[in-house]
Amino acid sequence: MSRRGRLAAALLAAACVSFAAAGPVRAADSPKLQALEPGTPPPWTPGYQPLDKDEKGLWMEADEAERTLKASNFVVHDEALNAYIKSVL
Image (cartoon, rainbow, N blue to C red; front, side, top):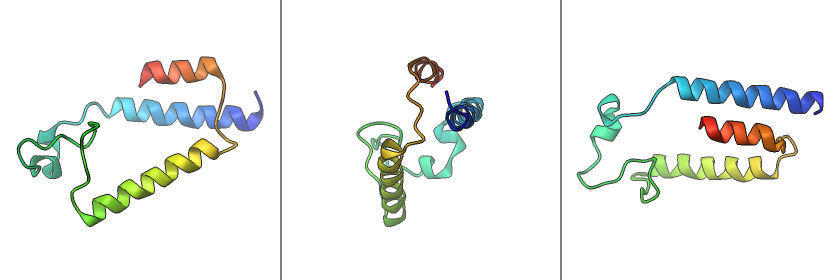
């Protein structure tokens, strides 16, 4: 693996560890989630749709970031590393 690949893998692993350490998100922790109408799925479920203009804009930015990442030359294609990251997440 190249130096750039090792750096990208280390950064990704650090981000995953930070994300995992944060713990699960609960509605009681977030006023915005508490404000969802009854019956509205939480934002991390497949059936959720953004509610306002700002949130829709953030979702569009996230979609664009995903497209950019998929096309990036910095993506690590090491199957063992990817399997480990997926098992952690």
